[in-house]
Image (cartoon, rainbow, N blue to C red; front, side, top):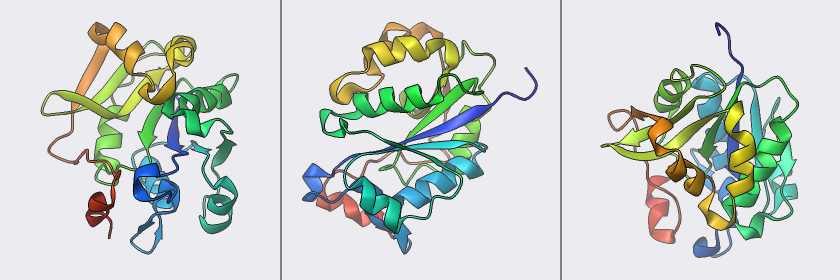
Length: 197
């Protein structure tokens, strides 16, 4: 397939419970909401279509963040965990033109366009499963070919996201080393805010 359509799927619904209830999408990074930075990273990495799953304070995110051209999905079940956001994002892609979804998390600003581009380049067919690796350990972003979407949606529960599905299909995953171009830390606690500029 010469020109596959790989949609960026940004999970940005978290309420930042361990951050005192600050929605992660609205954390300040380089003078703008973190969600804008994450969308920019996906676009610079090759995703011309970007779907963003919103949850906590979705109305405020829509008001404060500039996300032109993005498909914005509200996940009313965001408090259940990442699994519900992944299901909502996949549902928004079904029936469209996408051959794969490249999934990233809003709270990982240390992962930039170079890592996204590497994982994007691992696409071979709708049966592709690929993930960034950091010193051999699987991380984000993750690329799910469309053949895998029903299975991922069926198994995505709680905060585990696609973890169970990926464990079950570990032998099919192409790991793409990105440790030389990205840092896979999360912004989860007040101490982690040091990573934001």
